Length: 524
Image (cartoon, rainbow, N blue to C red):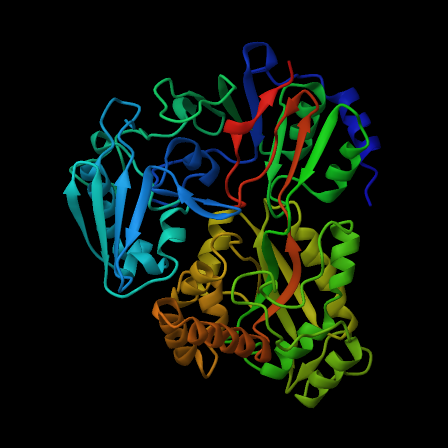
């Protein structure tokens, strides 16, 4: 483990240009640091930071640890055939520009999402909505093509079924942009300087319980060492992130020892994995994919990189995930088994060489990852070392996020780091996306002989009203993917936060993409 305290000490001595404090406890403003700008927070699109979208825009229902709860809709009825949902809206809600939130606003927003069908087709609910009816001013009916069991859960996701003021639409649409970011949520975006900061203030007309804080300053600090120094100096009070996006475990553990800081960690929330591309020349072989499974020391990742904070994942979905409590094929760390499988496939190690060959071709693979992620690089390097032990060469390529996503979309990878979407997306929304070419999961699976069958299985399990049949289909789907070794499960990830000790009520939402700023406050 790196000597973080000594690194911090050295940097503190040399760090002479203090970052200007944009907010502090004295004015009851929380100063939060992120490596990323909020970007375009149009709730009907995907380029904005989800935590920022969640601050401003709300949904009909709310996903909680106890299930789906009322939110902008006070209650709802479901028709006996499961194809119609009638929502009874709150009467006391307005958008922050004064526009009333009513059935007309709901219809306009949902239809704006449906108008961008191709972009939203990863979400099965978008495919299943037939039409939206206005029953009266505060009652709206959602009619589906088929019964769809995750309807309420998907209506409560961070995007795209959030509500923006009709006055923000451009020519009656939102798919090419919006005029401004006007929602019904507890926060209003008051200022945004791209790649510098975004200021959110409390919505004075908020219908619900108002936050105790006056506002949140979202400060963009791309360099993590600078971010940690700013936390130590008190210029910021909170760093928050999932999947190593903001924090590595070295930093987290180092700051745990100080009484100036508190550290928080969520329950396991999602699955880390490596997806293997079944349509690439080398990894198209099931035996090669199985060999790579046996080659990865997952315990080394869990202990050496994540300091024991996460449990090793034997399966892609934890057995605590709905419909996933069943036994399926697993792969333990057995380098000798990996070598046996490779040699059975004709991959031999020439005398004096370190990389296996087959008919003159080297067993050299490419793993790509998001270079801005604090954990992905370390995991990639450990896997590179593991593969070297069995004679497999692994090139690791860190790229900026857009280049990484482009490679994912094009399938130009042998292996790629993957994180499931976690609660409340797993498993339904997650498996729905397996059918979308822009996702690494689709690219990883498209070379499988039974890919069309798997996609049909997903289509059926999402709409069947038969609970027993749905359970059978989930089991068959995940068992097939495990047998064919498309994913190397690593660990079950947890969201982490570090904050100044004067800040309290720092916790987690069910979704790893949201930050519950509205619950936080400074100690008196």
